[in-house]
Length: 114
Image (cartoon, rainbow, N blue to C red; front, side, top):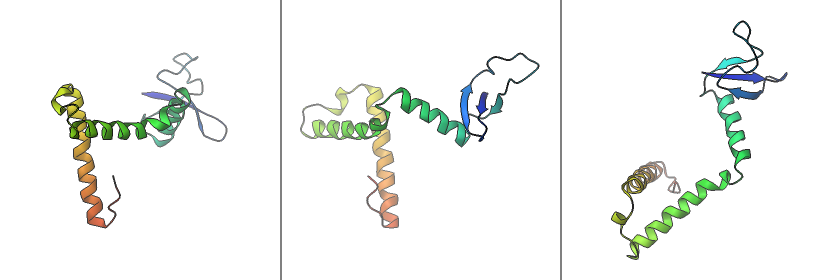
């Protein structure tokens, strides 16, 4: 369960696992919310980005690292089996997802999904 506080405009300004600063008889201005509500997700996303200024570039860097690993394997610098099993599984999962997205893009004429 997640507790949130809103400002006068109704925007989420705080989130907590417990209603901070109140006893059992009153809510102290905290409302119960689901963690998957769009407003809560957006608020927590803002906190994550401000806490880690590298967050916006992380997804792009993941793709660069995948391409680098593929290049090293293609040039026989490393073998896929040299990677730890967990890394192999993640790479295979992403490759499968990317291939499925590519097939879907080819079906609707937008072949630029990768």
